[in-house]
Length: 335
Image 1: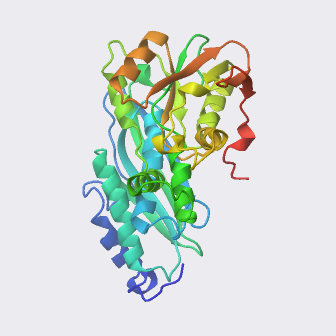
Image 2: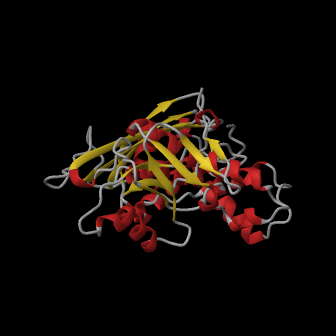
Image 3: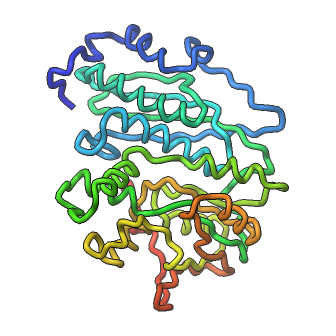
C-alpha cells in the first residue's frame, strides 16, 4: 500500500512514538510491561485463540477501510472465543507494517478494533510491531469458561439437534457488491448496505453464549463458528465427533434479498449460504429440548437446521427430497 499524500508514515514517526500513540487504544493497566497479567476467576479455564490476516489475502483497500479491517480482525477472534462457550478477557495485536504506511491508516485500524471490543466489553491488552513488506495482522484473544460450559467440536451425539444462529451467504454477497458494484442492481439501497455491512462489520455471537449460560442447568453443547462456511462447520463437527448429519435445505436461513430471483438463482443462493464463509454465526449441536429453547430465545433467523445421526454420512436433504453430500473442498482453503 503506497502513501498517497496521506500524511506522516510509521517510519517517520518511529517505533517508540508509534507505541505511545497506540497505547491510547489499550487497557492502561495491562500495557507497558513485557506481558499482560490476567487472573481468570477461580474454577475457570483459560481459552486462547489466534487469528492472522494478510493484506491482499484477507482484506484489501478495494473492499475494506482501515477501521473495518480492525473491526473484522477483532470480530474473528471474539467469534472463536464465543465458539468455545467462553467470555472474552482481552486481546493482543501483533502487526507487520511497511515503513511507508500512513500513520492515519493505523489510527483508523486501531479505532476499528477498539470499537468492536468496546461493543463486547473487552480491551486491547498488549501486542508487538515489526517491519514487513505487507500489512500483516495477528491477534490473540483470551477468554474464560467454566469447565462444564466448554463447547468443543468433538462431543456431538446421534439425536442432537443442529442449531444455526443466523443467516448465511450475506457476507459473500457483501463482498460481491464491494468488488463488483454493478452486481445486484435490483437490490434496494437498504439491502445493499446491509449485505456490505455483513462483510465489513460481522457480529460475533457472544450473545448466544450469554443466553446458554442462563439455562439451568447449562446444556451439553458441541459446536464451532461458521467463518469458513456453514457446510465446513457441520463437516468439521461431524469429523471431530465421529458422527454423521442430516440438514434440511428448507431450514437454511438466507438474507431476504436472496429470495429475489433476479439477484440469485436458488442454486446460487444455496451455494453462497453453504460455502460463502465469513458469516461468523455459531453452529451448535444440543439435545433437542435445549435446542428448541435456545432458538426461542434468539431472533427469528435462528433455526434447527437438522440432526446428528450415527455413521459418517453428512448430507443435505433438498426441497424435493433428494440428498446432496456436503463437500469440504468447496469451502475456503488457504492452500
